[in-house]
Amino acid sequence: MQESVAGPVGGREHAGEALAAAGPSPTSGVGVIVPFDFALDRELWRWVPDDAALHVTRTPFVPSPVTAEMARAISDPEPVRRATRDVLVPEPGVVAYACTSGSFVDGAAGEIALTGVIREAGAPHALTTAGALVEGLRSLEVDRVAVVTPYVDDLTRRLEEFLAAHGVATVASVGLGLLGQIWRVSYEEVVRAVRAADRPEAEAVFISCTNLSTYDVIAPLERLLGKPVITANQVTMWAALRAVGHRAVGPGQSLIHGTAGSTPPPHLRVVPDQPAPRDDAGTDTEPGGRGPGGPGDPPVLHKVRVRLPDESGALARLTEAVARAEGNILGLAVHGQDSRSVVDEMFVGSTRGADELARALREGLGTTDPGAVLVTPADPHDLVDAPTRALDLAVQAVGGAAAGDRSALARGLGALVHADDVRLRPTEPPHHPHVLAVPAPNGGWLVARRDWAPFTVTEHARAEAFLRAAAVEPVRPRWDIVLLSGDELVAQPATGDEVGAVEDLLCACLAALGPGESHAVGWTDRELRDLLVTPRGPALLVRDEAGALVGLGAVLEGPAPGGDGELVLLVHPDHRGLRLGRWLRRRLTARGAVTAS
Image 1 (tube, helix red, strand yellow):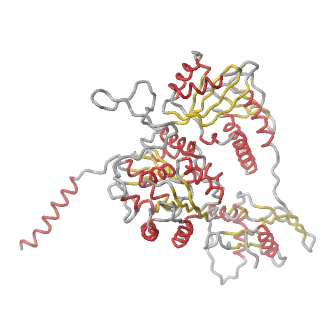
Image 2 (cartoon, helix red, strand yellow):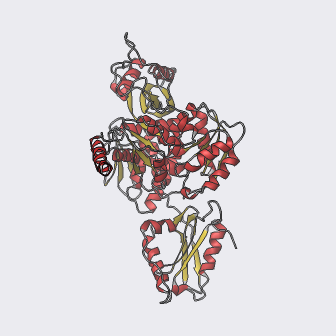
Image 3 (spheres, helix red, strand yellow):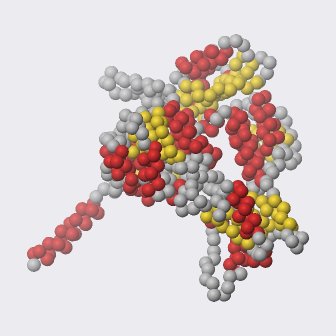
């Protein structure tokens, strides 16, 4: 009888203890920003202990294959800033940007700037996958690696350059050359790529991309190779959990078990680490007036504009002033101003805040004029050389305008000249140093305004050249098809905006099936858009003289990444028997999107 009573009584006592237990710490959460196509939420959780939590948000959709352009789009400061603010609602103790390519595409300085964007948006701690990788390699004392990526060669090369900037040599690399759907890569393919990339001189292997599943192969690969295997999701979770005082869960993984996991990892720096001042008691102290940062904090990327006399030695005095202000010049350009002066534009990494850096530079140059030195937060994409940046923005503006985005041109101009606001006005505004006005291609004036610095003569010239380039009408390939009946059809690549027309074509094709045929109907816009623009290229669309869509040919990614694609052909019932399907197959084969058979 006593035994029968003891169970319920013990259970009540245990339940009471559980109800009295402390809840989770408000700083035990990890905020994670992932790209829009991220498909491995479940894998991230496998590294998370029971007493920690993940809060995941995504960047906006970008209609682009996995290239350097896409990496820059998903790491653009504005969407990253918005995503940070979204994920901060549940009050995580750290925010991690979990995209390898997005955090290394603009080099070491770009990674630093990206971390700064997250921190400035309110994150208590901030890190990126690329930054965590460098810290992970340092913790394992590794400076020679073999690299495996799912990327095309250009992105793989940029990863190697990023590692080299941090003193890590890539002894061999294997890239799978994928432009999308990376999450479909199997463990077998990952293992095969790792074995192909590994070299005796490599001290570790790094598997890039947070959309590549790796958790279950890390420990077996380490046993097979006899060296650490580091992966993108693993190193991101390792660093993020350390930042909130937790250790990641990863049985048999060298990175997880080779560190104490109690000290947040230091951030990447562009200036040498400076020891914090100490008082007589040996306590670390912060010097006064340093703004948001101190010498132990990570640097922030600033854009600095300095008006200098056009004379010998002026630039030397400026660089000396930057050095005395503990800054690191990462980029420099000269803007024309007038016959007596020029404007030097620099990108400076510094632990000092903007106001303090400006004061230090004015003091170093011997001027008290507040307008002589202007400092503002920088966009890491501007670290790309100016012509490349301008061409990228022009291409984006042309593509956006062709897709019906009326604000694409103004947005591109604003990014080019770093304007606070760009609007279309019917007439030219009065001259003002903080206003830049250029004729719009379709009439009116595009008027840019900026408070932090006047526009230069160079920026006026850039804006005019940008609009001339963006005003050129894009030429899309076109094929005219003449049928035996004399009717004419027109074929062109899809733009991704033909969702409604494709849905009508699918419905017509399904309606033509016999009454005994069973078929499901209903597609999301995303599914139809993925049919129109695939990793193998845009679909080919055939329209009749009235503009109705009567045929579609597309190649989807096959089950084996990099292998033969899956051909999709749709022909309207009223146009069957005219060999449209054969024509579409021949065109797609000539483009290299599908193998002839």
